[in-house]
Length: 420
Image 1 (spheres, rainbow, N blue to C red):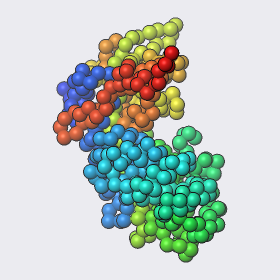
Image 2: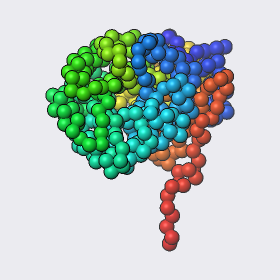
Image 3: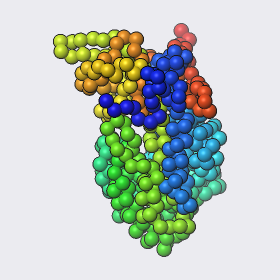
Image 4: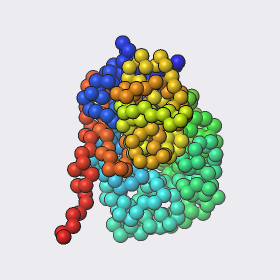
């Protein structure tokens, strides 16, 4: 049987991350719990930088993947900016010490209040996705007596060959401005008060495993930029993110190869290329620790019931996503059984794996759900009034609690009691 992917390894029969036995962390912090490897995050940043080389570029981490403040501070310390999609993410980024001039605001549904907050903060770019959004930004910027820096997001109509829920670059998706509308809108923008055109960009999807989609989109962008700069100068080309990771069955490209591929198609040495990686930076850097509660057999069907559910990791239920599962005790690898790994949530859709060859987990066993650093804690909920798990960051040789486990009191602290 193959072994777990980096940063996990078995040492003396115990599953470890950064040489720290995960069973000890489970005892210290309880289960379920998210554990992140700071070393793995920094290695992902370094991989990107190798591909960028000496080109003018800015890595803006797509913080929707994992927005824990201490995770954000790791990126800030490596001179990365942030790609945000809400006012709440702007608040988090600023609280983490990220300079506003390194923040890019993406998303199709920015509210007027969010626009005001971002303008007052002085962010680098608004990635605009519709004419209506542009006109709203123009009005608000004029009201504030300031100027909104704009990058138009182009929809290149490129099939990224990914799950339809995370495809963003097709003409049927809600994202971006249609390619055939860009030139007219670009000309109109030059006459709009309160805005300044700084760049153009694209983003074609998430969990992408083939460089050809990126290459095709970059070629479309290259031709577009060559024509647009005749109308107005541009400073930035935003190439989005979307590079996939290995969840156990994939073979994604190296980040350095990805960055080099994009840059080779965009030979604009005087422009800054903005990369917005998210999942690639943190996905394989995290695990979700959980403990087996019961085994149950219904006729011929076996269920392994653990204390982590769809409220802690919704990806399998939402996307039918695959995650690897590794026992914290290596001896459990010796025997496999076919079973469903399910949680305690009162839904038939509460599963982490269905009809899979899994280790013969027994009640009390501890296991790690791999590749849980992205779109796990950020998508967690309190469904069934379940407190969300703690988050732990392994950095500089120690394990630090960077978000405590919620309590029952936390579940109701925002509710307003009746005066009756």
